Amino acid sequence: MEPSPLFLAQSLLRCPSVTPEEGGALAFIEGVLKEAGFEVHRPVFSEPGTPDVENLYARYGSDEPYLLFAGHTDVVPPGDASRWSHDPFSGEIHGGELYGRGAVDMKGGIACMMAAALDFIHGDPGFKGSIGFLITGDEEGPAINGTVKLLEWAKGRGERFDHCILGEPTNPNQLGDMIKIGRRGSLTGRIVVEGCQGHVAYPHLADNPIPGMMRLLSGLLSEPLDHGTEHFDASNLEVTTVDVGNPASNVIPAEARATFNIRFNDLWTPQSLEEEIDRRLREAAGNTVRYRLTMNPTNAVAFLTPPNAFVGFVADAIKAETGFQPKLSTTGGTSDARFIVKDCPVVEFGLVGQTMHQIDERVPVADLDRLTGIYRKVLDAYFAAAS
Ligand SMILES: [Zn+2]
Image (cartoon, rainbow, N blue to C red):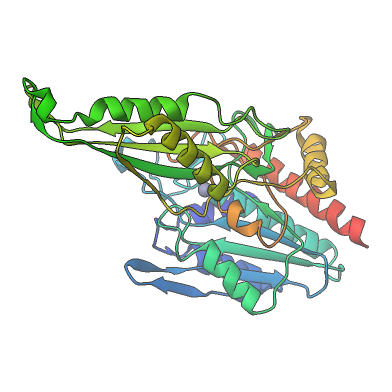
């Protein structure tokens, strides 16, 4: 009898694995996967200035094709535990829903991946191919000792993946709504306009940086960056803060600062975007505004897994299990998929995200069964197509 997704999810929810604590979650997964015949590794990564983090890599089989399940067992803190209807680490079921921090983001998803993989292997232990798990304990935190290093570590061992499913909660309202086939990139920049402080009654002796900042920001926002692409919304620039910090009404300030963040689509790289920002600012500044621009380094590039047979396996499995034709989306924030996509195509599909990071995070038990059914059908189709 293979463990049910509910048993697996409950067991994981009872591990208090708030980043960077392992909390017993990876040890539990290790035990279950080893029992099923997986080779399991538990690399620990360190970096000065950040806590050490435990991770897990497991593989069953040595043949191609290699399908990788990816995710994280760390969770965000529960907040005020007394505001939860049920203890956030007790894995209680009430009204057909399983409560706990990580229920949807994303211990529930990991439980379904495991249940599906174990069931598939149980039915065909000698199948041609490999199934792997790449589970990090550092997704919700600084994300330094997690997926990036784990992928490097796996590559160092000669591991090569063909496709990956990342089990983040991708559905906005109900299971089957949405697959993510890409993500936008993110880039942050800071502008400082230098003026000269002085008395408001003697403006000829001062140089107010605020009108200059207004010109620069207008220049940045004057035209849309683009109009979107086949699979992406238009790139968007948001000014997130403008700071002068001047408490006096009779003083012209010395300096004005602003920060902006851009969520960009596959028409841009961080480099091409920086050039465009630079061009717009120079044009707006002319010879009159003195300013400095600094762009924060970013590893959040835009990526797309073009709809292909693999995306089709996932979409068909969702349709068969839920009746919904999932939307292929690239919306939302960044995820660890941006690192994995350097090694193999990634699609993201998991539970319904509505309660993630909230008080009373919870998942309908029925969703755990249906998501397991979906992953199970993906495994069937994936390895049938290869043999
Ligand atoms: Zn997550």
